[in-house]
Length: 124
Image 1 (spheres, one colour):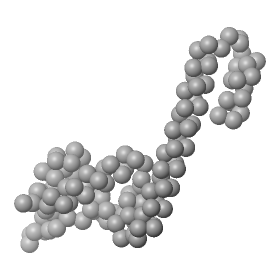
Image 2 (cartoon, rainbow, N blue to C red; image 1 turned 135 degrees about the vertical axis):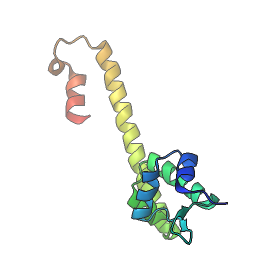
Image 3 (cartoon, helix red, strand yellow; image 1 turned 90 degrees about the vertical axis):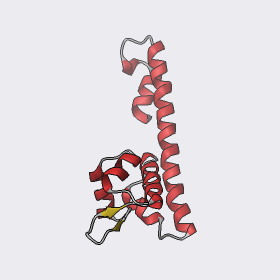
Image 4 (spheres, one colour; image 1 turned 120 degrees about the vertical axis):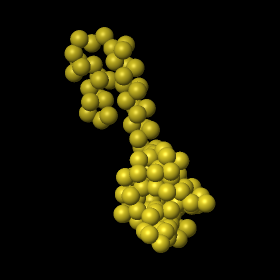
């Protein structure tokens, strides 16, 4: 069974222009009818959902496009690079959360008078 672009977009939870863009950049290329209409099969729908998940994980469309034809080693390298970036973001958010917790308890009248506030400002 095939889905037309509007049906596919609704099933995936995106706008139709997103599917057209993904086709333009080569991450999702649907089959075409004899009259040129896009038809998305179940495999295309699954692939589109994976594309969305990869985007939510911070992968760019170029990285996602590179995953499909890549070797296992190349795929692992792309994924490990993104995982490292995610871990870095998590660490930054934890430091920021700790700092904000400190700010709620800080009794110094000026930020530069507090060693912890000054340290965070200089080093994050």
